[in-house]
Length: 432
Image (cartoon, rainbow, N blue to C red; front, side):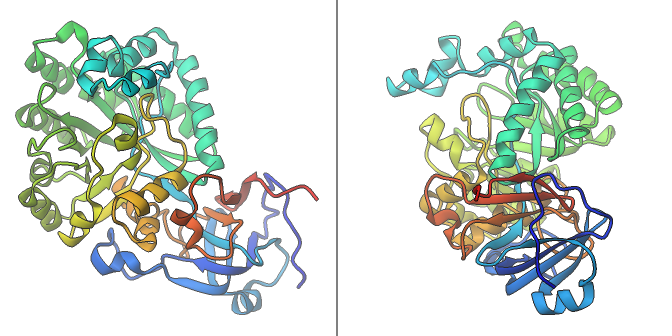
């Protein structure tokens, strides 16, 4: 059967989509029903001259092109991936993509050497974005966030977690989460929503962190659980923000209302966030620049995924998380962009490059961390992140003949096509 190209945004004909002759088909298939750790993170499951058949939005066949054509060689929309790499769509395990405004002027302050706390003192940082987001309508938040999601999609992200946390009042947090819900139902990307009312202590509660943590636990959490599609509750455990006891109170309320825990842990100092994540049964602990050996050991024992965020370190002038140390400790490692107004990165390819050049990760480990492990870090590990029968038909076709170009090439965009649920939703093929 002679392959024929399917154009951009091609809707399935009903017979499915067939991608054939990939130079390297990166399946990430494996026997693991959990995030991968240690040597497991070096196995990409590459099939030379590979093919994928998608029908009804789900993967039905994966393997050698000759065999897949034999089984599924009937009428289908066909994409010829000769000389290309095919792999699962990227999963971004940590973003703050829903906000209004920007903070571009803060870049000059950082060049001047201002610290995170000094930027806050000048009226910048999170508090600036809180003011802008509180003043925005839900419709404005939807429109601004949609543009950022479009950018992420162009760089190959097909699934992402999106947090609230720039409202810090019940009404504003609900508006942000409802904006995320609206986008989850209308944007090609799959979105997982996280409530983060405990992102920082708002100005009106300065010096009263206990009272604000009580508001989050007693008023915000029940409202979020009943009026939004949020799946997770995240707390930034850090000196001057929220203590471990604040987090325990908030997570107890979250658990009672069906929300799973995530922790912003040990970013600026060792505050015991990694150990707390293990204690409360969190799905992930994120950042981990200063996590203790004991904290990482507790995470490994409980299977808590460590999400590392190199873009945040670049933007804030902070050290990089030692991903090699996490992997040696037995912690499953995932990657995220930490897309936010202070670290605006829409490219998981850029995150992969930082992971390999600055975090001590092998390219194979970084790819696992940006796909299957990131999927488990946001509760989607059985749906996305690998090319396996029954999983979502989300994949990328790269303009490269070897997957090793990911992480190796700095800058640019290797993604030629993005397929979401068996539909081509982005096509950057050169015009002929």
